[in-house]
Image (cartoon, rainbow over all chains, first blue to last red; front, side, top):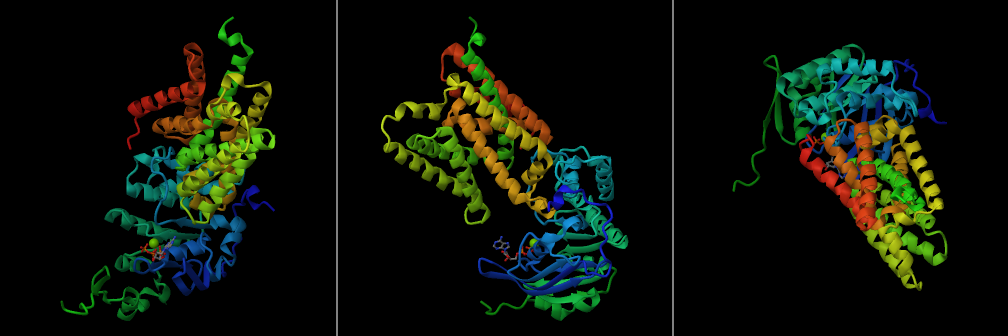
Length: 278
Length: 266
Ligand SMILES: Nc1ncnc2c1ncn2[C@@H]1O[C@H](COP(=O)(O)OP(=O)(O)OP(=O)(O)O)[C@@H](O)[C@H]1O
Ligand SMILES: [Mg+2]
């Protein structure tokens, strides 16, 4: 009756054949203004996806639907075959790094305690974190490369360092599905590269990763699938198949060509000429 | 006889310390969630509740407690539905309940004497029964805050992430509102409803300047608050000034010192 009173068991028996995410015919509108119109997407376990689309396409909204923060007006959402609000002990298998950290940057809290919050859900009520939980915190800090910031107050971090703290908080439950909303916004080139490498390592160790990004070119080096969203799902599948001029122009509303000539593929966008030459 | 040998002075100190502790604790959540206006709003709603109690011949404090809990839930409900911003919701409730109180008091004759007590506090007139009530509310607030320490911390810091982690965020929010309402009304006897919001916000705001840990902010706010109450009461006794106002001005002096001296730069 009170699932949060019980401590989550460390082994989750999630069947490997059930999709990590299954979104079917989802509609979301804000005050009658449609944002997602009939989006369907299946993300098998163990895959690495990039979710692409212009500003306002509904990418953040789709992630919020998947983690259960927004209830769609129509359609169904399943995470590991269960509705997101009824994940029970499997909830710890879900890691989410939101786009905007809507937190008070001067909140009196240290890095280690922010990361520990990630485990509060699985700890259950009235239980204090134990040595096992602190080990998980140290591991997560190690993974994102900031073990030296463990004792720092949150207000004494740079924007990029803070981003990694929130990534560590999402990793501290050892999730099987990781959702990241523009994790590289405000992160320098070297840190972006090492973030992508970290995600690739996590993916190789069996984690399902879905990342929202605007970095169309670079992202395709790392992911095995892309989904292009602009209120509806424009296309999805393997990057080299999906990222055609037609798809990109459908998505961005402008002509775009995707070049593969160098080590890094990149995107060239040609604007439509102005309608009237005034 | 020295001042501390008087029973009324002992009750005033004990009552004042309990109020100092619970307002400081709830104030930490209020300040960190950016809900400072909530204390003011609820204190003014308490005016309507007290008036209702006086008019109906019920215990004014108990009536105000029920009334304020309902008002706090109302503010919370309207805010969470996204219909209004929190400060707007409070602004509306605050004016409406205050007007309601004035209207009710107009219906009753000879109200002025009691009313002054609730507006400005009468800490030197705390009865043993008042003290029992304060102890009860104090135990409730402390018990809940200790039992749900990590959950309340999480929803205060990052409500959205708390929901994703599976915490009953809505329940915890309403629980917090309930505790704030009970704290505000319980404190009315000591500092008066006009000054309750000051005691909620000022010690926590001073502690915020110094603390790098949540529990440190909590402990510091309690210390600042208790020091303000005790020193304020002694000043008031020595200088023969209004006790509520003296307590709040003492707290303000601590806040000013924190603003000037604390290391956190914003
Ligand atoms: N809470 C809200 N209320 C009303 N409209 C909203 C709300 N949240 C988002 N929207 C609108 O819904 C649309 C999709 O928003 P969403 O945040 O999902 O886009 P996005 O693809 O993540 O964009 P970006 O790349 O800028 O992050 C936008 O037009 C936005 O203005
Ligand atoms: Mg977004």
